[in-house]
Image 1 (tube, rainbow, N blue to C red):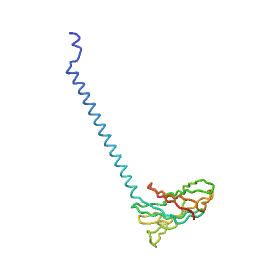
Image 2: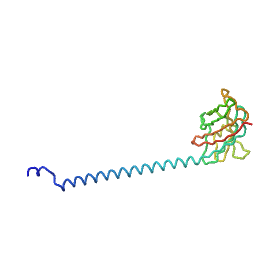
Image 3: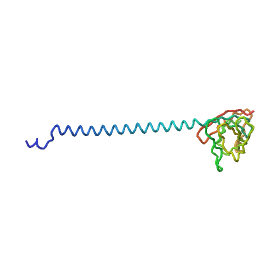
Length: 179
């Protein structure tokens, strides 16, 4: 008799175990629900940022390659403005890669490129670059990049790869050959 007075009844023990399982399942379900919600929100933000990048579409066309200069146009065919400079800060970068006569590739990140003009694509109306340091949708810019004298010159027949990277994270790439 003494032992039975100190023990729990089977019904009371089952009730404690059932309550514990119910609480465990409730919190587990809540954690799964919150995790799925967070993942779906993260996915939505990723898709939105990808859609924003898809609104930026630039293309380049190489016009001339000389021993130390590359001249090309940048066209903004997207729906976002591409800022070139603002307050003496370059918002876009140009990467020039070329093969020299010694058999070595050289890649240069250039932020101090020269913009010669900006205009609506195919137009004869030119904007003053100082007052208009950006490329609106439907506009193009003529860009001249000079290779520093500390690097070898681009040899005749040398392959040159030009990449124009925007502040939006989108870039355009074109390959040319020096004539």
